[in-house]
Image 1 (cartoon, rainbow, N blue to C red):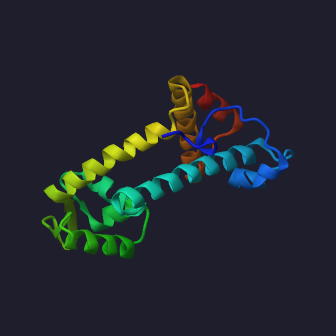
Image 2 (cartoon, helix red, strand yellow):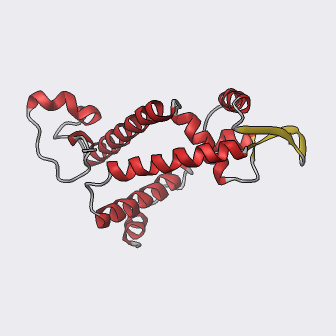
Image 3 (cartoon, helix red, strand yellow):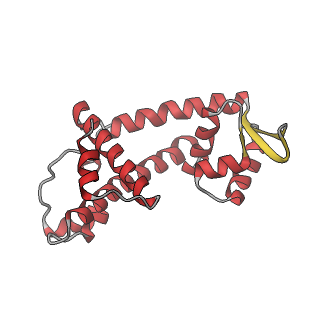
Amino acid sequence: MKIPRNLQLVAPAPALPAQADAHTGLEARSLPADHLDVKVWLRLLACSTQIEQEIRQRLRQRFGTTLPRFDYLAQLERHAEGLRMSELSRCLMVTGGNVTGLTDALVAEGWVDRSADPQDGRSWRVRLTPKGRREFKAMAAEHEGWLRELFAGVATADKQRLFEQLGLLRRQLAQASAGDEPSPSTARKTRSRP
């Protein structure tokens, strides 16, 4: 399958004619005079949104499922011993009500088992059933293939650099959200680490 032009992640992108502005999505909100931080944020958001929309569509078409359901199953697949419902809610960054609704549906379909937590009788622990594990593994293999396809136009070395730079950004954001925002000199030292 050919990757749509608007999903290719090659840089630098040529300037688009004015009539193509509608196709640039979130980046259309960026102006030439905007600070580079604004432009980077909008480009990250645009790329993430485009990839997410494509994955959502493919999950729906191929498996009749949703991205939240896929994410739920992925968390359980990573934790063979299962997770408490509250832990699963934290991992997914959603409310307990959302997790309960997904759990009820997946238990009814035989993909997930819900039982009392042996260490805390007030909590429920959920885990994939053998059927759920088989079904998820098939879905996950295709999901990985879709991502490889979407990123196929980007050289491996460029993907590695992007991965490392985004890791630096994540660390800086974690420090900032913890109220421990680094000074400009600390930020420079952090950026120079491999």
